[in-house]
Length: 468
Ligand code: NAD
Image 1 (tube, protein in one colour):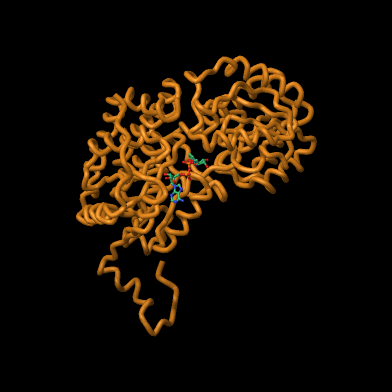
Image 2 (cartoon, rainbow, N blue to C red):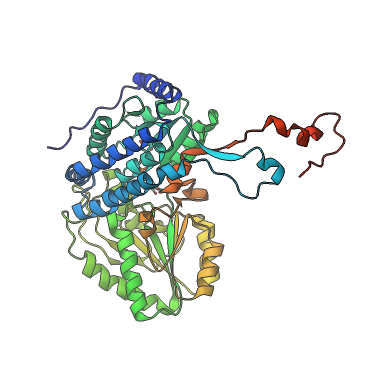
């Protein structure tokens, strides 16, 4: 039985929810590491016990194939969760900084990881499960109380998560608000101690402005147009694998992935061979996808936006299929001979349309990326030439840079995940999640007997040289 879709949370109940979370925080409920670990373990078993229900909800909302949900939403988060549970006791220990001058060593300087307090987590629609749980398993080990706002565009997953998390977690330290713009705006009128937002850049700016009114720190996980470079000198074998890896990165979740390869820049020496290989592989891997085996577009508005982009392109469509607005089914689409002025190159694609651009000068290709779509979330460089890799990766800044691969960095807990510039700021996953949700608090304990060593600080100050 699918979980019933929930009504939006009444906005008048929001201040009380936030107040209750703040009170619990100040009562110190989240301070004990054993308490945090209990909450994390409860989340782990909640997920394990409800894997099928989670997949069912994702199927209803986005038509995600079950195996894809298992791989990209459930397994990754379980791995991250176990890693955090295994290491939390080590991470919470205060650190003694190295290289402290002898005199100050007497005061035992330490760095403590301090919880922010009550944090707000706002999640997007495209990976509604993992992009809710993964910030949560940073906020909880950090010792925060949490208000979670799921996406209104995935009502089944949001309702399921609301039920499961509310049943699993301590209601004194965790609460959910369901809703859209009105409810999120009401939340942003409250004073939080930290906001973790995942979503579009346009909304990210609204969040950051509202947060600034209370000097609330934010982490913004945004999107952008992540470019792919196909450099010179690749063998046919390497080009073929490159095509497969790019197609997988692009068409997973029907292109609705923040780190999906957005467009491909191909050196002219490989252009014809590479486009032919893309075509061969897309037919092999995605030629027979249907509404059972391939995600759907989240809503009609997005479907219409993609249709409009493809209708207006000046490039040549070399692969497409039968699209259905009714089923929000948008076939894998590849367009070659695209320019930076094309309709496909204006905004983040966030759908299964792959534009291909031919370049002859690497330098001007890089200039165009920087000029039109600077600081993407990911930069993908297919090249075996270290000099070529260095030129591209130093001239284009990005949240992540991958050589000869796409997407898989997201699943490695030990790597930070986050953007730069237009793709956001702050990072998380694994230990970075714990650090994202804590503040480095400096501390020292000065012995009274050390006074003679510090007497130079009192007025009248005549000599600044401390006796080091
Ligand atoms: P969105 O910005 O429309 O919505 C995200 C959240 O913000 C939702 O919970 C929504 O209710 C809320 N929201 C929407 N409009 C709002 C407003 N005016 N005021 C306050 N809150 C508002 O994003 P989306 O369409 O759900 O997700 C797609 C975008 O998210 C893409 O740009 C994608 O690249 C990005 N994204 C980034 C990451 C990442 O980790 N960097 C991951 C997934 C998605």
